[in-house]
Length: 374
Image (cartoon, rainbow, N blue to C red; front, top):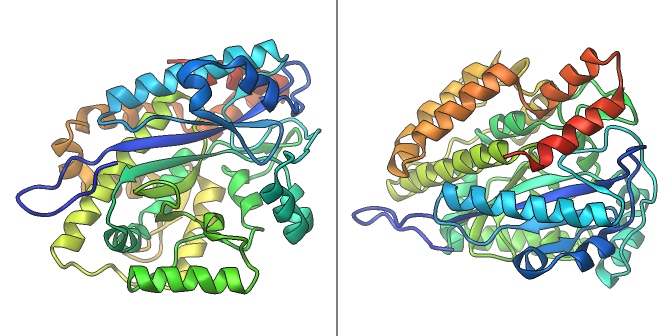
């Protein structure tokens, strides 16, 4: 993916998305350990862009590097539909949801040395329910620049988290949270808001200290909400639940790229990042996972709490020049208006449940349909 410089104009930043999915029984909603069968049923690009995740009942699909949102949307639709068809041949359904709404079963770990090492090191935490996220990559090859961009992103990622909330239910019940996935993940020692780092040397030294202390097996276990990717020359934003539909994913990817573009401009212009106490950033993420966009969020720049949609509007105001530069503004405004009307994935799940007298199976069928819509 391309880097960016602040000469006459930034290079146009590429983007890509990693999406995690559950493989569920269409009748019971139970997790099915059929990832290997699903992978075997895939072919061509869909096979090379797919891999098994930390559970036998999970699948991850990775788009190629994309220049624009049209390319991204096409790849997302193609990959989701190919995986959904392959899942059907294994008796499962591909489901884009942050945490299973029904029940958990067959939570086996793939027979890979690294996964077994994680299981031994972290015990029951490694056997928590399967959860699925969406990771957006934006091409920034300069790691020093990537670290500085991550510093600037800190105040805005709770808003992105709220927009992606897609896991209100677990084990057949409403958890009271919009993103139960976020609550589950916080039990891992290397997940959470990205700390502020003075430089890439500071970042690398901290990561090495955590590895030496036994907190992580390796640098790939840096699960902070934004990071210089360990696999690609990118800034990776990994704060969100997997989105229920392709349109939702495209919106989030557009906003994340626009944020990165905006923050690169600020770094190049010598604008320092706003320093915010880590405890306040953590509290903002907790509130985002709990309320989503249906309640209030912590205003990390202005202080206090404000209606979530007011902070979404602040985010849009901040990134509008970048969205316009990439010809993404009209699409983003349309999709944000749609979310205002329809709600996020979490809101939609609750609406289905309320309209069917608490029928979680109806929610499951809704999620299955949303996963391949587009």
